[in-house]
Image (cartoon, rainbow, N blue to C red; front, side, top):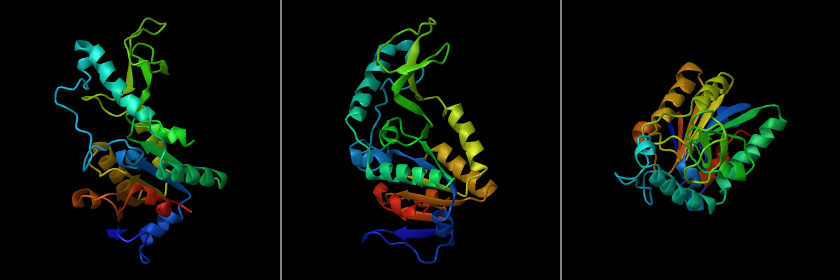
Length: 248
């Protein structure tokens, strides 16, 4: 594992074959976490200024049946905060890279653990691992509509719910399937703004590196050693620095 420190501005190891593989990749997968959106004012899930979910918060799937009004109200408040946020320089760098690789007949496929729409606002194409707070989905027919953050019925008669994974639910099956399809052809996996604590991140990185032999990089603030050991290159930096570590 190569650890690259950016304590004094942009630096890059001059002897990191793994990083050279990433910079020269034609097809890469990027997984983004809360740290990418943090500069826009949205909280992360660990570290200073993190989001602390109260034990009694209506954020679990079981709450939909027992106190649905509270579920919608709780997530409405979060969605309103998200609605004030704007894409960061990290979001824009990923969009630029995605467009550049597409022109060169390559691909940068973005998966995000975030439920905000900041990738979309920066004109990127993205797969949401845990869904989006800006939409709701009918539990009967699966039709998605813009979120109203209140109980409502679909024309088919089924109830709508927030289109995100609540506590006790797993990641979206569509994102999992797309990752498996994409990784077969990818040269690298890059994780930005996530510590690696997510079960799905750990699993995906293991699949990418052990099975597909992809180059791997983690860029986040204060990476934890046990998660950093999964990656060949670890960068301790703000998410805005991701522009230096994307395929050229």
